[in-house]
Image (cartoon, rainbow, N blue to C red; front, side, top):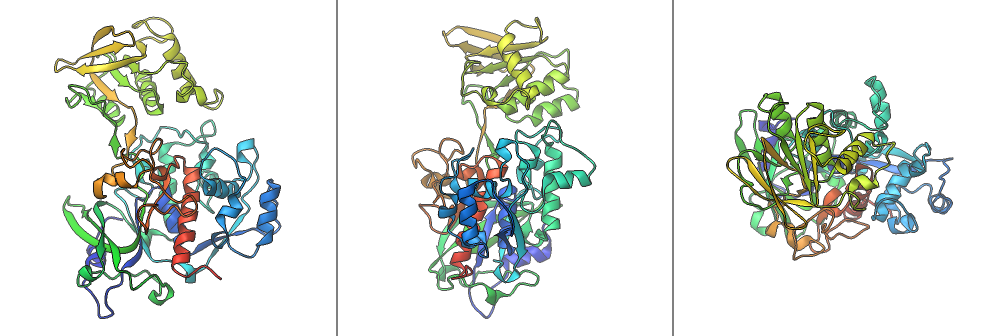
Amino acid sequence: MLPDGKMYALLTRPQNKSGFKPLPVVIIGNGPSGICLSYLLSGYIPYFKRDSLHPHPILQKKLEEARDISILDQDLEYLSEGLEGRSHSPVALLFDTLQRPDTDFGGTAESVLTWWHETDRAIPHVVLGRNAPGGAWHSIEGSMVTLSRGEWMGLPDLPFKDWLKQKKRGLRNNRATAEDIAQYYQHYVVKKGLQKNFRCSTVVTSVRKVSADSVSNHTQEYWQENSDDSAWNFNEKSTEVFQVDGFFKTMKGDKEPFSVYAENVVLATGTYDSPTWLGVKGENLSYVHHQLSALEEAVKNNSIGIMSDPVLIVGAGLTAADAILFAHHCNIPVIHVFRRKVSDPGLIFNQLPKMMYPEYHKVHQMMKEQSAACAGPYECYVSLPEHHVLSFGKDKKCIFQDKNGHQKVYKISMALVLTGSNPNLSFLPNNGIDLAMNSSQPVNPKRNPIDVDPFTYESTQEKGLYALGPLAGDNFVRFVQGGALAVASSLLRKANKNPP
């Protein structure tokens, strides 16, 4: 789905005789959030399945009250009231419990939803993404397994386990590989007929509000197969619209610019674009990296190996753990530095069930027990809890400091700073900071997400702008789908496609 001449013209075509008419919706980001929203906006409408019995009796009663009305057209606040679970979003909990009624209690009850394709309720939209459909899942090393259970990675009306069976593969300890997840999302887009909405190899550089009058001579047409422009009825007298600028990356490596105008923009870009830096001296040196892929590439190129100086891994999250496991598998010595105590309850390893995550439990054991170089039960692994990096030297010597102010110096072969990542919102005014819960701090998925209405996911600061997934504080695939439900419900109301 690389850009071609036809698609380039589609987004930059001059005004037609009917005058300025912006696209109803532009979705930025083609990961699970964007895919799920595209599915809903393509006219796939969820209803409560007849003869279904939900294990939550109060929710069951509410669903029976309006059995013939789609979930999209009901009061989401009313339906989600009183639900509890692993998300802070009421609509995320609602949609998850409709699709997986008792999964948190080990149950296997089927979804209580049935899906109808009502093409007259589809809303024209385009999904812009850097990678193939699936987003950041295509950038993760394929053999890595998911933190969540495999079945929780599925999207509506196509269970992941069913797709996996067709591939004659199974889950690993109930979890899936990143490669399988990426392939499943690509398959989902094709299977559901969504590919006409997706524009891949696309980089957005700017999103801003502009006067509709100022762009009336520079607008675009947008159409879909079998779509009818008269079937949607957004506000054609808008005084302001969003201008989305960017470029396509062609197969030849060229950059073709585009501009598209939209009534509504949905931010679904995730958080993997900008790895967090420590901000210490020497961090920009060539041997200091901020992605796990750098270690994989170094092993592949034989630039490091069993006889190399240790690899420094900084961080105490799951990506750092994946790096440790990879290095351990390749017999590469590791120095592991992290700021917290091993017993800190906030440490992710202290929150994971040992039986379900044996490999991460192994790393946790290493962190606890190994504090002497190349000795003890875990050869060539050194754990340095409650330490932080002071500087990286040009001679590949790294200086650490412990909680008491004592310093240590190690010679290393390469460094991986894996302390998390932040969303890249450089295409928004002021990097999107004005949209955050705390508008004096950058957007952060865990500490400072974009401030949205909990039942529409529309920005409280910018009408017509929506945020999905980690940007709105939903950090697991099973819960980002509720955000898509909320956005689709809101957009259908705006388009006058919600029945009275």
